[in-house]
Length: 427
Ligand SMILES: *Cc1c(COP(=O)(O)O)cnc(C)c1O
Image 1 (cartoon, rainbow, N blue to C red):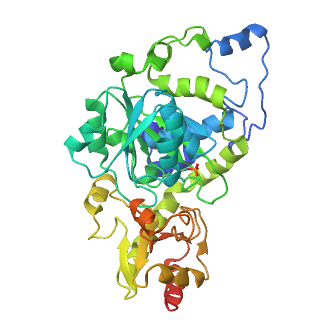
Image 2 (spheres, rainbow, N blue to C red):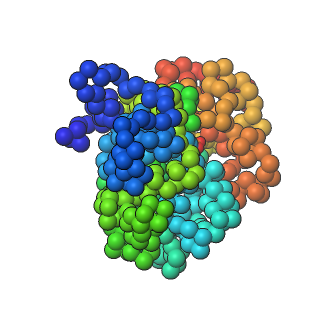
Image 3 (cartoon, rainbow, N blue to C red):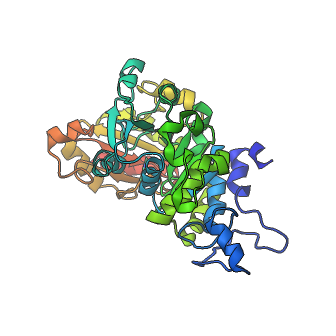
């Protein structure tokens, strides 16, 4: 029934459903372990024959309530929280790929995800091919191999702000019988629900808008339940053949549409253990309650700031999909008609030195690595996250040396613009 609620209502009402006399507000189950009356009962949990809690490394009731809320917001069938967005993107792949396998990724990616897929997964025997997100169908199809197991992209890429053509990527993935995984961190389910456009699995760094206050690192994986693993049985043996570590359970047989998340919990969390702490999940849940309100204001403010910058004589260029002339404006209107996100990038005519001069004179906006929280913040990748690179390497990584990443907060927009205005006077 709650699936008919609008996002504003789900943000408040989904997840924790207290029974008679229980806490109205989601409690923190600050316990590593859970008690049972008989050895037999506990045994059934270990055989995956009964659902229940036994150890917080695998599952915790606080975490599950928050995962259920995110699941509802995305329109999925099952979800799990992870300790970080990195862990979510790692597990999302590891759950269906192993040494000798291959994945296809849109090349416009968060730096951490690029490193994970290009280097760390490679050391584990999983290779990635990176394709231009604007590639035509033919070029996209050419990236696939016999051993390809998944396609990955970001709804709005961080920091390059490329809007993914989700339908195009879903079509290519499905033609090769593999799922499309979309990192929906920047758009959030408030602005885009990738499952409605054919994505099969969604991941999040909940660290960003979902938490919204820069208090907790966290992640989430949501499954739409739409991908038919049995139709491509030989590609996904981990889901469709017996798991000897659980007495030969076959995940798709036993759990149907819940197979993917069940396996990720039972195997990956058990063995790798990147669980979110229940304390952090509690704080994330409070953040989620105001997600709709905040995202709306982030987008409204970012639109006004982007328009202000576009008309400023010292500004060379502005990248924000909400602007009419932006390369991704039409795709953004299709997938995110209510707005994209609060992050803008821009460059100054005075280049790299100008960027540094401006940033050093900001009074309210803070220089931080983080993006997508309530406070306006800035970062100059060439001086910070990418400072070890020379100009040539920066350009190859898609980071213009003058690029300033501005994460527009939910302060009054006139105060944000006034801060930029006075800082730009020093350029
Ligand atoms: C931040 C981010 C991540 C990584 O998340 P952490 O919570 O920092 O581990 C992954 N994807 C995107 C799009 C991000 O912005």
